[in-house]
Length: 104
Image 1 (cartoon, rainbow, N blue to C red):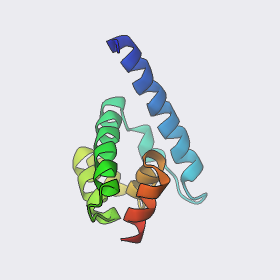
Image 2 (cartoon, rainbow, N blue to C red; image 1 turned 45 degrees about the horizontal axis):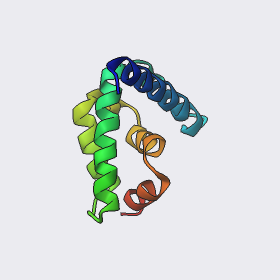
Image 3 (cartoon, rainbow, N blue to C red; image 1 turned 30 degrees about the vertical axis):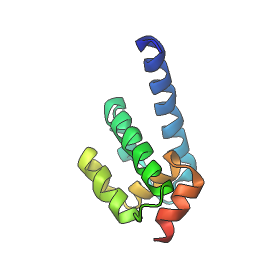
């Protein structure tokens, strides 16, 4: 895949992610911290989430707290918003992987 096409896919993923956050957040919550999320941090979060998801689906025993710790090292500002890591996981993971970490 050419670098130009990869950039387009990354930008589309970024826009879709932000849209999903707006749909998934609770009505009373403001998700304005995601305005400050830039595409490079998003790509790092997305790539980590895909690897984390693979591990979960292979049977590793992780929970949402484990995910939150790692995400906050990638993008420390996420700590300022309650349930932000939950939103990110829900927006980026397959539903089966999300169910597994939510129930652990």
